[in-house]
Image (cartoon, rainbow, N blue to C red; front, side, top):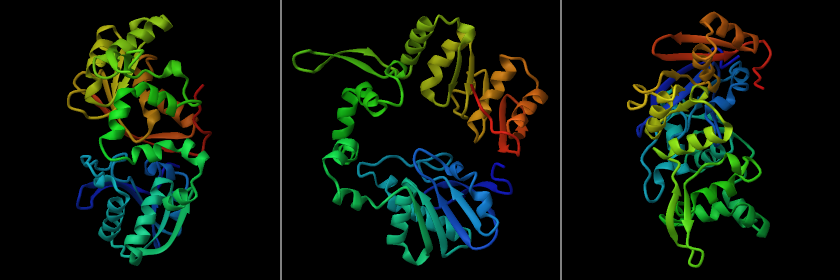
Length: 329
């Protein structure tokens, strides 16, 4: 089941609002997700814990449906200490001055700050897949430095790391995704460099804004696809140009946010916590399926479509059932 018995809400913690899912009864238990995740990572664990605890699963600031403050030069808005303050304020607003904490990955780093800065709030603490950062640095050797070079690089004062990344963004991304994503599937900003000095001479390709149109056409040419075979899913203003282009060539455009520039352009807009929800407009528009057949498909794979507010913007919830997990070929 997908968080059965839990309620989803936005709770203000002073600096902004956090998206929070909570349920159950008993001693308060705060669950903190890792990166790049949201509270949804706890979907298979939280309902079981809710039998004995009042479970609170927030999205940390900067993640998911929670507020995203502007970046500052000292990165203070996204410091783990700031995130820890959010958690203390959140639990206080829910009536919990002291609580249990279960945390994973970057959420566990937030939990470290919780324990250091607000020890009076912690009943007990369980951390998954992480050790304190100081332990990493004190035990660092050559292998660690080479494998985690970005830790040291991105910790340099602004704007040094950003300047270097902006000089060769595609090379940085390819290095980071080596062994995970084939180079042929990475389309980033590309420059032509002077072979002697290494200085940028010209821009070969920009993969943002209108540059996405060029990337799309490059893919269409290599795959020999017609315009009506293109399905484009976007969530921000940088998708406007390419969505207009896809509409013009007869493709399907789907917005997955309520961006005010995007939704008037997209043929369909769908809002949901579940990524598989994007299948719904595809099945309707491309395959011609009706709502009953779509519900049956999801149900056959262990998912239930709920709260389907059918309008130009589809707003819905998908939760688990007892059938087999959804699989895609």
